[in-house]
Length: 389
Image (cartoon, rainbow, N blue to C red; front, side):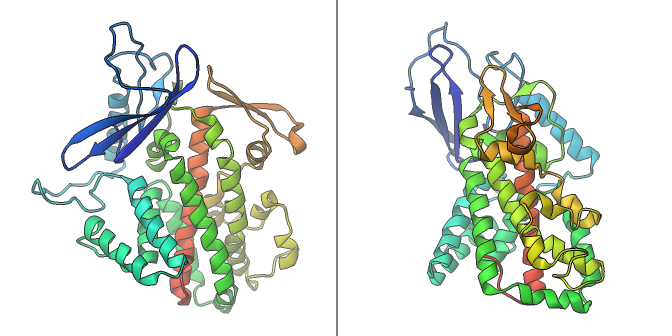
């Protein structure tokens, strides 16, 4: 059982190998559940000889235990996460609530998919010029999710969701970058960066962030199996496999995120120029036009030596992007191994990647983009311009 009101699982039939899709609908107020068969299945009484298939919304399962009855792998992993949180000093006291009280953020369960569905509606209405309807959506969500700390508008809501998604793993990186921005805020070159934040540019960047969030949450039933490991800075256990292995659904994801991320790091490059004592759009050896014409993989070199900027970009593999984007990956259902070739045109050495590691890397590059969104929201506030929403 996971955190969302609707939790989806996909796995292969043990006989014909066709995909089966089921969902568990959870009512957290009535404390009840309902199982729905979405594809190639129906509910029936289970004969004693029925195969066991372990499904889990938020955890992976050790090799060989996918069909073990009374599997306790999730309990071991919950304990490991709690121990890691305790060791890092990240445990918090949850306030006592009456049974009929709504649990607010940050103490509410991490039902981020459900929250995104609400953010998405408010954001879509705002983009379509329905400002009053959008504001009403924000007010309703504020009363439900943030009753003790009301939302100040759609940008504030987007900020809070990105903060929740990225914490604690990316908080130190974010703070390092913000510290750099603070140190530069009185620099004339930094003030000149405001001219770059045109309404047209913010609209383009807003579309990228919207599309990234939408794609991530459309595939959340796959990514949620590893998301909490990444977000909590806990290593995935070795020899563990995903229960839901919908490779065909996520094979383009890394490439899509790489494109969005690499298209957005010009902001970091401009901050790097200012840090090095130059106008924001003046590079050491390139004109701004030449920089923007670089291939996406080449855009990181301009600032990678400045740790406060480069540390946000640790997950940016152009070879994996190429394989993801150009149908260059094959997937073995039995072993859950992805195979692809590196090098230009996929002509380099053969590479292999476990499916759970692919999911992990997808989540990492997505959270890097969300960290960049948070930085951009900070800058928009500093420059007193509208946020990219």
